[in-house]
Image 1 (cartoon, rainbow, N blue to C red):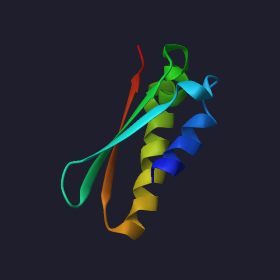
Image 2 (cartoon, one colour):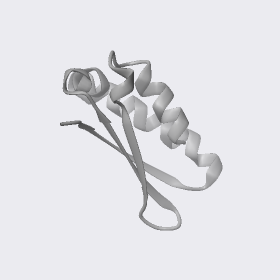
Image 3 (cartoon, rainbow, N blue to C red):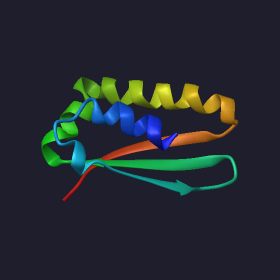
Image 4 (spheres, rainbow, N blue to C red):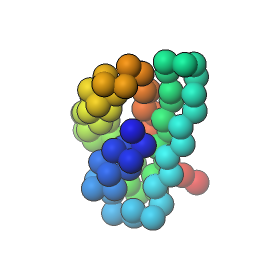
Length: 79
């Protein structure tokens, strides 16, 4: 799932080397994936009124249905 998220985000941002994705297991069925991008690219990942971020979450949710696991996507900026 992390590879899919990296593919989506890398096609949105300018600074592809500055993408950091971490996955933390909350429970057996729930994982939290945190995406950190450069400060200049955060707007491209979130989108106007959060529409791009919402779309990313929908894609990850649909893809994770096969695994029987829930993935929560959080988006932030790197220092």
